[in-house]
Image (cartoon, rainbow, N blue to C red):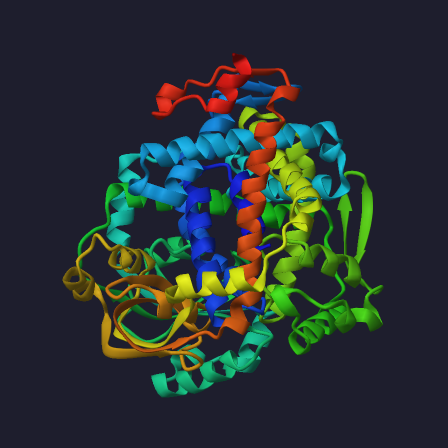
Length: 608
């Protein structure tokens, strides 16, 4: 199941960099969380938490092409198997995925030849499944529909990139470089009125000394209705670009300054406590360019978000929202889902309503939770504000999807080819699960033999030690985490360094808790990060493993059995594809020399 879900995500990613980074990260999580608790759903919990902060970094690699509405691709048909047609784009997409995510520099000619043979054989099985009607199966259509909606409405998808052209003049890059060294300590809060603000902080707040201000700010932080954000506000100030424009001209002598605004991303009050300028090297122009492009797309999203909610007359039912958050908080489900038993008493109560082009729509609690639980990437809301944002995101997603479809974004060549490739993957998956998996039986002796042969895979590091480097900027931490940066250079730009820092199962800080398996099972000498922590960014430089333990066979037997079954199913699928080759008229115009391989023998025999 884990491998299947990983393939589901990766096969539909529209950019190699997104797909490769995500696949690599998910495969890493899959291996480490299995060792820690192979019978739980910890993998998904980790994945959703991790995705919340790696998503920004995955996006940076793709935003530079944001202004290109239609990316030129080679969608010419190079392989026909009966009625099924495969384009050059699909061949290249799958081959690049094999090279970049599975093998890297270690791949050789034999590996490439074996991959082509397996890939083409399983395409023949896919053609066979299509002929049997699997393309119209409900589970295939449902999965493809969900991923299509996700890609048409996500910030990284083609729709949002079609909304603007990215033009970044050199002057903007130089201006942003100056701001790179400036950071602020910010507290952001929301108030219905100035009277509400004064009631909590006092009309004389800014005139008081620091100790009084600290005491009153502690009251603000403890008030869940008002408190929104606290931490370092660093370049590139995302997602607070409007606030950043106010701060550029602000240079206080010290203490706390108050900014009131109704237009700063819905923040009513921003309390800026300190301005800090740090010396250090500048980021590269390419990095600056990536951040600027991302910020422009993000700004477009935020502006559109506000406009759509206003134009659709969106209205939240506050009592239902509060009741739902309490249920989520008190009854969290597995895999970052909300169990229906938690909302059963009030699942039919209206949660929000809005206007669509087709008419007015009211959404109840149960309908929203069904939507939430079906998302490919999700995380349980930590407070009512996060839940509200999730609900608003549902509304915006619905309206985005309608507009994207009306603009025929889903008819663009690259999107069409990605959908075909993804659909083929789902067809093959359903067919193999129904026809091949039931026939594969894994004996206990096979599981035991695999366990003994791969003993190192089932040895869990329970305690390790290294250096904890603390940074006030995401870009600095990202640079320090890059293994091409020397440890000495990374330490030099850290604002704080903790030596002999110990990571131990169940005893890590909150920021590290979901990443325990990755930290513990990293190689000695690796650096892991950046990891956000209350406005700071952490990088853990692993130095040595301190304690390890072997996971008993009985705890991993099911996982081993599943892996052995998957491997055998793939082998049988390849054999089946080769046996079916004579059934179809195959037109093969793939340029194998371009990939450094020969045409598979079973296809040559077919033509002969």
